[in-house]
Image (cartoon, rainbow, N blue to C red; front, side):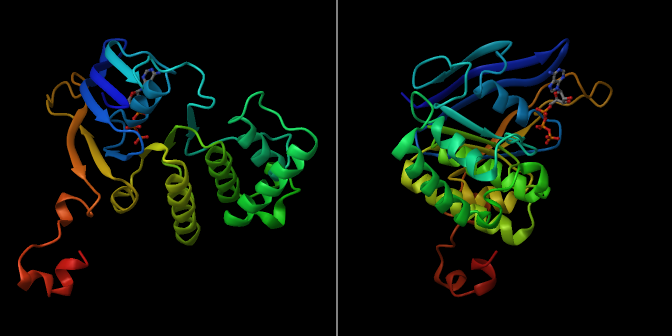
Length: 259
Ligand SMILES: Nc1ncnc2c1ncn2[C@@H]1O[C@H](COP(=O)(O)OP(=O)(O)OP(=O)(O)O)[C@@H](O)[C@H]1O
């Protein structure tokens, strides 16, 4: 039995279908990138995995159970515009993120000191050491987003749900955050679902790239059908569109390999 099972899921708002016949099996530890046209239901799909919404039809199982309604330890989440705790400093936000992962959820005494030292290491990794004592409102949007990503990652959730988490970051910071995410993923074996508008990012980070799209379309009634998973690319070897050529001639052609 796969870790995440999605069976014939439909989601409808009022009379308007958003998702239809979505089926998916994901193994624990897989990194699944999700791409698709704006408004096709990618974030809706993440909300279903988070149990913020219940599917109109069909079922979702995580490790054989219905997803719990509280994200907490099982699932962490980062949205494109994530709000960190405004009344806590940057360092405290990271400590709070880690404490989600451990009952009873708080650190005291020596454990708190150790957590602060780990938080400082994380801040170093995400380039926020110099603002460890500052409050989020004094940071730029990109810095707040880095903090949000760091906070979710240090909680080491079993499933991490990312909704365009790197969209607002400049290219250099984005690459650093990719490295940080991949390293933590290697250490924790967490399962990741990431919605992105950047195909290259989807293929670089993902083991699989799912494409959500409508298979049925009526030009007079564009809202009459929902989207489903139309492609499920194996991205481990850079994906189907970039398959490693098997003919020796092509292997020697740098243009083909750098595609
Ligand atoms: N709670 C809701 N009630 C009614 N309609 C909703 C609700 N949530 C989302 N929608 C609609 O469902 C559609 C899919 O939204 P969703 O945010 O899932 O798309 P998306 O693929 O993530 O879009 P984007 O790439 O632009 O972020 C949109 O048309 C949106 O307006």
